[in-house]
Length: 166
Image (cartoon, rainbow, N blue to C red; front, side):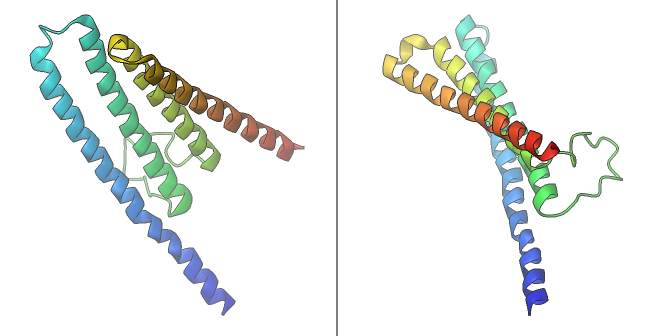
């Protein structure tokens, strides 16, 4: 009975696979948004101010960072929690794939969130006249929460790793 329960529990990890498939669809949605941004941005580039160009480019950077974050979560999560991917047939397999453990995944996730938050904050500062002081304060506060959370998570992981080395 115990062995059967453990086998069923172990097999349940495959319930995560559709989540990672949904993230792939999320990347497709981000691609559509990127193409929409390009279709809006490129025809107006000659008439746009420098700030408008920077805002358009920052939006594209934001979308690409978010898509990259989804790739990291998809592959690392799948390999850490569901099954190893056989990459022998893939000549262009990135070296980092298959080497990120859960701790590395957490740190990459938080780092990506901090970068995305910083870009959103920079976009707000580029259009500071359209933002209220209250909204800017909230954006800065939220960004600082992400930064401090990331630092505390990294510090905690370092302390735990140092404790296990002894």
